[in-house]
Image (cartoon, rainbow, N blue to C red; front, side, top):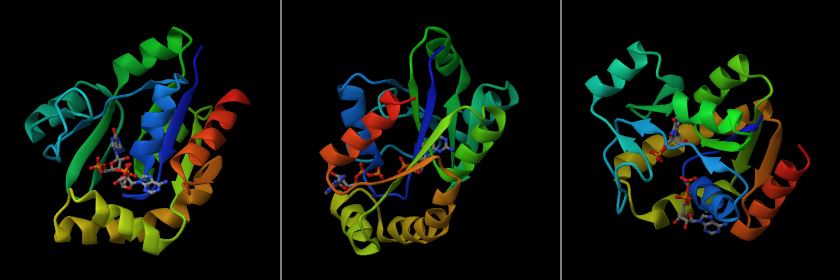
Length: 181
Ligand code: ADP
Ligand code: 5GP
């Protein structure tokens, strides 16, 4: 059986960038989430996310199609159950890049999942990265920074906390965690 790894961290900390590096290294499969938020920048349906209307998302909830789902800054986000279960039963490791409420739900259902919280080097650097990405409005940035303040204390619920200083060092550290489990 493969293992389930959950990666979380405040918006702008660089989780997406680090996870992309880990996937390029071939250490795991990446679960593509569904969301009701609009595509950002160059995002494409079926690549970064399955972009759904609220009604479509709610239909999937009623069909028990998600391993977990949560609301974050006014939108639904959820992890489709089927591909995750298939990969795990094929002996493949799977990474879910999700926020803290989703992690808490999964940890209850699957206590053997491994939680990794990616921390920014500082709050100043977090804001700099979030703004530097240039994909959100000022209102969305403010909401996400407020959520960051609520999420960081919940890092204590995770099995590992890793600082994203440089992408390479952070990915090396996470790869070591994968190797030792
Ligand atoms: P998240 O997925 O956590 O919201 P992203 O992966 O989108 O964050 O990264 C936010 C911004 O920070 C992007 O512009 C990305 O290129 C940049 N970034 C990511 N990791 C680092 C790093 N270690 N050092 C400097 N910039 C980074
Ligand atoms: P973003 O809009 O920046 O892509 O993602 C916002 C937050 O939602 C991030 O913390 C991201 O990790 C989280 N997220 C993405 N997919 C899922 C999911 O399937 N479930 C949950 N609970 N959170 C998710």
